[in-house]
Length: 443
Image (cartoon, rainbow, N blue to C red; front, side, top):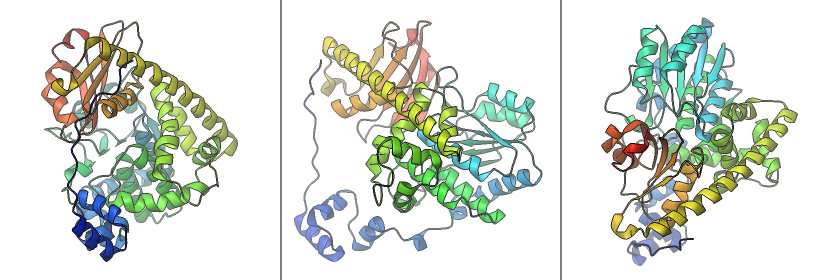
């Protein structure tokens, strides 16, 4: 077992006078004032807006998202004409909460959903899915938490006469797909309060705008609860609208109106016991249990959990999530131990190599649904970017990457190596990729 190596620490300079002045102006402790200074918040007004976001200061979503009115028009028209709509989601907690949120928002339409299999199809909308949906009579495809890089599948959908709306938050490719409408906060300036939203944040904005158009406000609380869980589980920054809405949502969750969330809290022994949940209780409690379904189970079960109104079914599904999460924990522990042993045997000098790449053998059977979690643990342990791969007996490698340090951009690193990949994507903090085993040494 490898020990924890020496880290390269960089300490932010302490400014006691400025911190004391800021603390007195805002009414906080000098330590908290110094932390906020370290985060670039130097004025009392900026600190107040950060700690207590004011909804009155938010620009209208349509002002920042140019395609939002068009997306609402397209959905509203499809609902009025009762045209079949397909939501194409993702198998992580962000993707499942996004899918569940929009399934509830579109319940007046003939709507269903598709989530690709993590094990057999990988991430995002694909051409086979588009062809199947077209044969089934779908007229509008709505992606959530994916789609911004699905150029070929969306081009196929347009050729087949389908309407396509993309809602995503991943980094923009060099060429945007030919969708009818695209909602992605990465298109916004860094200063926008909507910039840091996860996929569920974009779904929440779209659902809100559609409900306003149709005069339907009954899902407002449920949508906010799902937004809160998905945003924290996806590690989205708690700034801007995320901070404002998560703050509101945390107070709702102990008495959640979502049967599946209530059941999960009960399984965790936390239902109704708190005035408000802390973000880490979602990040390390609710989120992993929902994620476990998509990682080593079937995402359909997660969607059923978040959309059912039957308490008995919710309890049954929540207990299955709990069991899957326990299996996931065991898998992660084994893979991490084997990875650390491999690193120790290789004698890697990460202070010189800077980036850790590690590959499991076909015999080790590293589950590709959980290697991303192991990558996060290794990045935290070693303080460097981590790229980890799971190799199948057929010679195919599925990999996950984690940033490790803020100066490293995972998506740009993957783009630099894209000639080696059969598929890749992500954002600065994390990503995924696939390649042939013979190409790993070049990678």
